[in-house]
Length: 199
Length: 275
Image 1 (tube, rainbow over the protein chains, first blue to last red):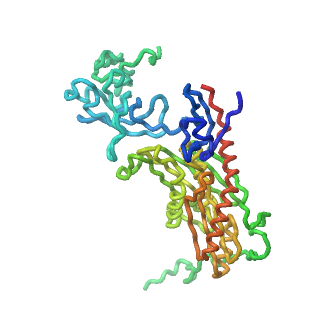
Image 2: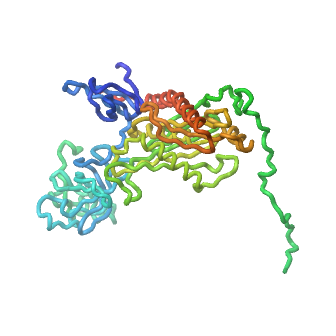
Image 3: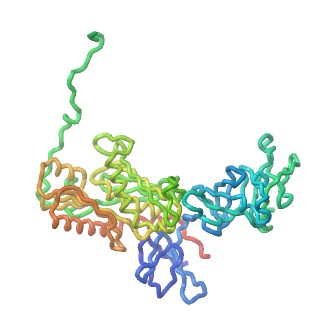
């Protein structure tokens, strides 16, 4: 493998006539400069010009962006919304927790007005959600679970508080059952794709 | 009035112990090209720099710099959710810079609480770093830069700026360019680049001299832009211009060392596999 080129922020890589700027670069005066300290990668994407990008070994800043699937933990619920802490963006863990909100009307796609958050989420549940908006100055990230693949993934039953019970098994799209007490509880369950389930 | 006869009391008048500390004999700076720290460098040479990145494991990025006796450590956290909600900007991130001197950093013991001078220097650090960071790529977030001066031998702000840029690059925060800092001490007609504490204090103790002051410049070398400029003292316009020019040249001399440090840090981590 030929030794890869390293660069520091501010180093001029090439001109815009040779490559298209990718991640970790910026354009200035018709030239492409690096904005990260790392390895320079040139990829031929099949278009006319190769894409030049700078990668650092560790996954750098990954902010929740609109449309990203995030994994979060419910911290508190309210008749109007549920507050969550965003833990993962896609499959990369975040070093710092960001806060998010799932409004009552964003929990599911049908019968939005008849939703009871108490029957969809409980504090401590791990939920898969999608970011719909960065929110405004005062509010947190706005998330939605209004899709079949989104919703509660891991939940513990109420008995878990006393018996340290196991996590519940999904029964339908709105119910989960505790394997120990066989009690059913209401949740908005996510339909996890078979390939993501570990046997 | 009852008089306490049981305790032995000290003298009624007391003086600060610092009055009795003997000052070291001043070396005449005007004679020849010898710097006060007895090194071989000339008046326009920098002190040799030692820099390393990635020493604080809890921080996203960190850097340590040593220049002569000056030792500065910096850690960068972020991007994280902004502390103060009312100042959150939807379009760009916020940079928060904090500079502190350890109590054991100077000859006189300081406090752990930030003093006024430290607040000033934090503001100067923030102004120098902000043009270098691509804040528009981090909306709604905050990047914390914490600089601690462990030992201060001469003006610390310029080395703090360099250290902070190294830490930001180590943290993987996107930047337009590295920001490097340099200081020049101007006395009468002599200019000293990267002064030590002895050189600065000798000047001040030597009484009032015409045309005396310090200039600190923060420069982005590849973009050739000055992001921070601070000066202290009373200087003529020509001397000020010459001092700024000397600082800019000092920054260019500093750049290869900092570049090598960053490349060494990147090389330590294994290269990514060909995907």
